[in-house]
Amino acid sequence: MNPIATILMASGNEIKIELFPQVAPNTVNSFIHLSQKSCFDQRRIERIVKDFVIQPSYTSFNNDPECDYLIEGEFRANGFDNPLALDKYTVAMGGDGEHFASGSCFFIVVGENIERLQGKYPGFGRVISGFEEIERLLEVELIPIKADVPGVVINEPKNPEIIVKVDVETFGCVFEPPVKVETQA
Image (cartoon, rainbow, N blue to C red; front, side, top):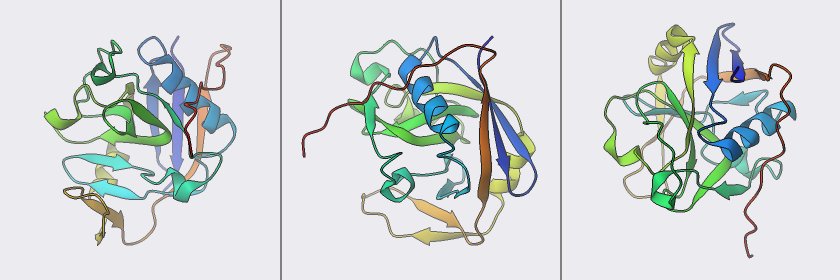
């Protein structure tokens, strides 16, 4: 059985995600590792872009040292055979779109046919329930945030939307800590 992640929101609603370690093993390891260390707990959602993505963090939770690391990008543009299309309700990890992925900046695709994501970010899961919570989040009042990257839209909820807890049921399987990319300062 594939691991199942449960994201409990402050609204009381849950989003469940089936993780695919056979598709992106190190990305799944990173997500599970951070979940088990409670790194996603009590975090606000930093980015919602209608018809594109919901992203709990695009800043590694303000450069939290526990979350701020890179992993090798498990996606086609980096030569990794990841067949998971980044279509609506796919879960993927952010990154540079060329070589690396973030260890913590996961996102849920909420748009249709977004070509600019395909093959450039490691898809590693799919939402299996909680669609009504995703739709609720897409309707909250948003405020624009100045982005340092040209062409990137950042909107955050006007009233914080909080992830209370992320739990992962591994069904007794052991997942190793992720292999991190060593970067030069």
